[in-house]
Structure formats: structure tokens, C-alpha cells
Length: 159
Image (cartoon, rainbow, N blue to C red):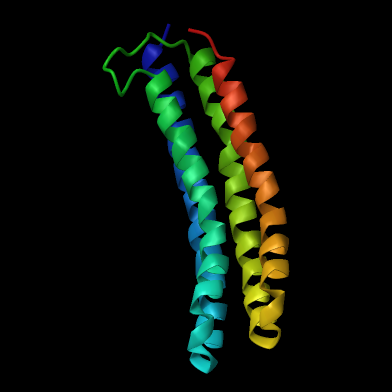
């Protein structure tokens, strides 16, 4: 059996979880921050509210990092006790990372767009801040489902 291929597949899955979810968060934060900067140029007093809207799309990156770290632990790269993985087992680990990687990528970008629109809402109607947060948080639901899916799949893999 090619254990190097199994380990490589597993590590690649962990890297994708971290990279794609982080990529989605970075884009989402950038979108929300640009919109918020425009609002702040007119009304600097809204910084606290806008900071929350900017930070919301960043959670996907944390979810991806968590799954990536769990994969590193499962593969023994943290303890140094690396199991001999078959390519099939490596593929299992790889595919367990995809839910958080893909939902983190897509939801991070879309949550950033919703947060950017929320910044516009806060600019015109400051009392509607919580409405903007709730709308943005609804997108987060799918990132959380991706996180839970990846953790459940990962925990189901035995080697």
C-alpha cells in the first residue's frame, strides 16, 4: 500500500479546509470593510456597530482552521505518531474536509456582501443595526453546518 499517498491526501484536505474557508473570510471581510469605510468617512461614531458587521464573515476562517487542526491531530502530525494510511483512508480524510472548505468559501463571500449591505442600512437607519446583524448571521448558518458536517465525517473515520 502507498501510505505516502494516503497521508498526502489527508494533509491536502486539511490544507483545503484552512485555505478555502480562510479565502472566503478574507474576501468577505474585505467587502464589508470597504462598505463600512465609506460609512465611517461620513459618521465615525458608527465604528462599533460596523466593526461587528465587518468581523462576522471572519468566522468561516476559524471553522476551517479548526477542522484543519483536527485533521492534523487525526493524522498524528501533532503527536508524531503518524498512522500508515491507505489511499482510501487518506481520501476519506480529504473528503471530510470539503464541507467546511466549500461552505466556508462561499458563505464567507456572501456573508461579506450581506454585511456590506448592512453597513449601508446602518448608515441610513442606525436603529436597524440588529436587523443587519441578523441578516448576516443567517448566512453563517451554512458555514456552521459545513463545520459540523466535517467534524462528523472526520470522527467517523477509523484507522
